[in-house]
Length: 350
Image (cartoon, rainbow, N blue to C red):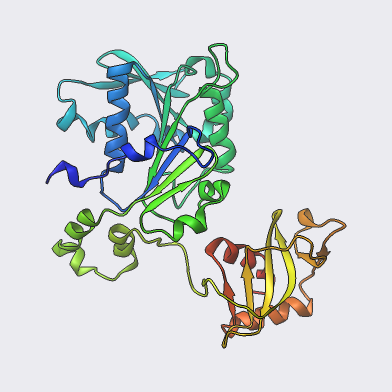
């Protein structure tokens, strides 16, 4: 199989963010087995060999750090580095791993779950030049993953007379859910969901949505895959479709006649609710288009309740009415993130 059919991240890592600045986060979400991990693994080793840049492999849990170097290097050794070898030794009682390329220190392996503890020993790995988080979308995240991710990066980026050095993070995954914590933090889940291929440029971050049709075509031709064609797991593996997200009733509406009902606040974030007057079969619409001047702000969460909100209880007629409307299929949601927030609001009645 020709190597040029596989993923190439050169364009992603050369892009600027929405402000025209150099990003520090580079993420790609693409279909399975298209070579994303291999491309970044090769880049990290090449950068060390050519420029002396040390790299950190980021895992989620401690048990994953001990053999991470072996699986990482196996992807690339045969084709590009047949004369090289990568080894690892435990650092600070096994809290992290020191990496050696041909016996020369080249980097580290750390886990997000230990980020707070690792902070105490950041002087041992604060010469990291770049970081790599594979499978950044998952079905299982460490508790408060974004906080731990930021903590680990801050620890790696300290030192050398600077409060924070430029330490780029490369991230890749197969699509699992647009509601993953990284897309939510960057505010791009709904945007990326609307692309089959393309780039999202945020502040300090660039996200690529990739779909490798050549790889997908080869996967579709497999006799094994043909036997399971049409199943959700094959849609995920080949077509890069989420196997978690439920897009039922998610639809962008272009209503011209509507009545603005209220804002709904979930964990400090707003969504709007309008009554639709001009689309048959749709009575209510939850959307991210919010009028903050609206004085009718509802929440069911005590943490969101203040002098500007109304706190609803489980017996409120309004919630029961909305739940009944949803049961009959008369509610739409503008995107998956809005649907999740609306469901959190409706959850005491569902």
